[in-house]
Amino acid sequence: MSNTYIGRFAPSPTGPLHAGSLVAALASYLDARAHHGQWLVRIEDIDEGRSVPGADGAILALLDSLGMHSDAEVVWQSRRKHLYQAAAERLGDHAYACGCNRREIVDSRLGVAPDGAAIYPGTCRAGLAPGRSMRSLRLRVPDAGQDAVTFTDRFMGRLTQHLASEAGDFVLKRADGYWAYQLAVVVDDADQGVTDIVRGADLIDSTARQIYLQRLLGVPTPRYLHVPVVRNADGEKLSKQTGALAILPGDEAAAVAALLDAARFLGLPLERPDSLASFWGAAIPAWKAMLAEREGRPLRSQS
Image (cartoon, rainbow, N blue to C red):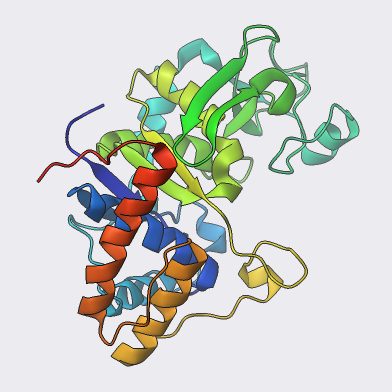
């Protein structure tokens, strides 16, 4: 691990930020500032079919109005496809062409991964069947017994996932031609020198796959911290699909109120500040104190 802290917030421009995504943004920003590190913003628009025109600009404008500024130039995944192609080529025989469609994979009844995706049964591992053409590119995971990936999450502790039984050979490039999230995020984090990833716990099941990819590509594994996700009254993760309301740019009082709600969700015992400056002045040391208590040791400082 580098002595220089580099964190990031990587929203998908499928709509405006809502309360759930603000919690992830705030946690990543506070962690970077508490470590006297850099905080980067990356627009994860690799799934171009789901991107909403203008959403990226609206997200960046809102972050700016909240006092959250990227310490380096913002990058867009849709402009970095050559990096993903190069990484896929470096994987060599670990990657293979798959000719299966979604229905065939679901019908295999092998099971469902923690993120809801059907576990791939390995049909094309030995090569495409006669008459089949490539639909997607998959990564071969180790066989059962050699497939355990263990990592320590700074909030949740030591976790293990068995790739063969809990994920299966996963997609690197999709049937629609878009590079998959798992590959893109690993390549981007390595390229940007990210040392610490702070994000929502809904992504924790992706972590083992990403660590395995990091190992195959020979790039460093960052530290991970997954924060709880905001849920609606029905217990569903807050999202546009579950009725999440957008956070809209407003005056300073509205910005402070939105940040305070997110901070309190994260467990920071803050009183209502009267300005953005006073919010950040209180929130950063509060985050630092909470981490010191949870991790059982003083937070490393680079002042």
